[in-house]
Every structure is written in C-alpha cells, then in structure tokens.
Amino acid sequence: MAVKEITIRLREEVLHDLDEVIEREHTARDDLLARLVEEYLNKRRDDVSSRIAKITEAYLTGTLERQGSIDDIQIDAEAVEQAIVQTYGIEDPVKLVDVLRDSRW
Image (cartoon, rainbow, N blue to C red; front, side, top):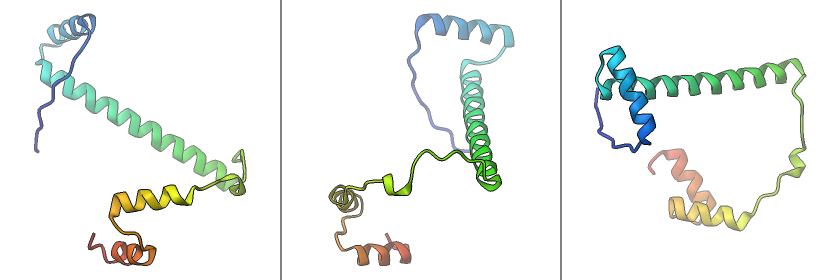
C-alpha cells in the first residue's frame, strides 16, 4: 500500500483534544489521524450510498417528489464549448466523440 505524507493545521484546542485521545488509546498521532480520515470517508460513502438508494427506491415506487421539469434546464452552449476546448483541446464535437470512444485521449 502506497503511503503519502500530508501536513495539516489544527487549532490548538483540537490538537490538545487529539493528544488526549492519543494518550488514552496509546496510539501514534499518525495512526489515529489516518483512522479518523478513513472512518470519515467511509461514513460519507455510506451516506451517499444511502441517499442514492432512497432516491432510487422512491423513483421505482413512483413516490419521488419532482421539483421541476427537464424543460427548466438551460445550457449555455458557448460556455460548454469553451470548457470542452479547455479540457480536451478539441473544438470539433465529432472528433471529440471519436477520441473519447477510442479512449486514446
């Protein structure tokens, strides 16, 4: 497993509380911070999965509350074109689709 080093800044009170947990659990600061980050990310992933599951269930049961129409969506074609050119360096939409389809990008 590759490990990358990061630097974080914490308020003094937070660092004090963190050190109390470290002392109580007899663990290293790096280990505790890594565990906390992993737990946070897992919880966020679970929260997102749960929201998606609830929306999917509501859609399938016909109880999804709709708040607008697809006709309400407005797209700024020039902004989209500029974003595509900035991202892919390609102006021709057909060429872009071909490149993306071939996965040679």
